[in-house]
Length: 435
Image (spheres, rainbow, N blue to C red):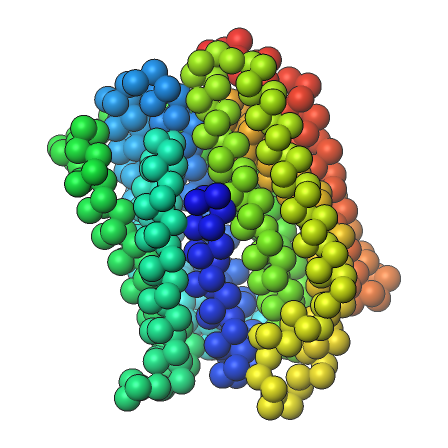
């Protein structure tokens, strides 16, 4: 529950940006959608190294090996920082890149302004991800929850002040949203580091931090890069859908951004279940307890499925009501946004179950340290099946945004089947045997 709530609180930061920018200006909303997509695609690849810390540290913690936990976490931080330094360079040419892939020049210009601030968030965000993986592996999830809730509230306050110019602050629009996001991430780093130093001194996480550990770095890298590329395959599918939606029109892109926020909000619950499944699977692997691993897998997938059915019903019953939360009542194009966004939310209801199931399978597979084959399965599902289906339905069959989203459903459904087959058919036995 703390992992689920912390994911929802973390997502509240993004959804606050979307709501407030939607109230401020539709072009700013479209720009933040495409800019956030660009940042996220690059971020999630590096986040694979952070996520690799969880199963490795959980298995070590089950063996009471504090030294191994420290080694794994340190090298996860090393890889995250090195990756962050390497990938910041392309952001300096964000406007030219966005125009080159067919985005509206006005939207690209605003997105560039946003990214020139958010670029400095990359390394702190990856550090936060690694520290959360470390704490989750130790089942210290309460601090993750409270830190995220606190910074989400801070983000809302700073956004309200800087986007609109309230309380005597300058009116910065999209720049204000970027400053708020950067500030929140830095504060989160400080909270998690101070907590670790004060409450978990036995791990000596930052003592002689500069010392390399080639053996453990290799293990984290080999487990982490498939996780990052798997996340890229899925995140890239949704990012490519945002680019294609931009080809259809600015209003469609803004509606897409709203619908994605709603779908992503419910997805945070599945991510929390998946993270918990990774930790419990990692500890079951450390105990060599295959029956517990199977029971945990059944329980996690069942809980995810029940929640998915509930959210699907909400999406189908009140799509335009949900979209209206993101749009200023005085917005001239409000009716069009509600119509397009509502239709996309109804399609999102179709992939709630399969999207939740595939991420649960990924979490369980990571727990048993099986990441390479699932990467190939996910990439095939999203890019060989899902993306072409989206393009064909949207443009060849002239179904527009709805067709584009139906293609996403197809890709996620294929991923769901393949990854669940992998877990039940092979990875449980292989993971326990390897241990």
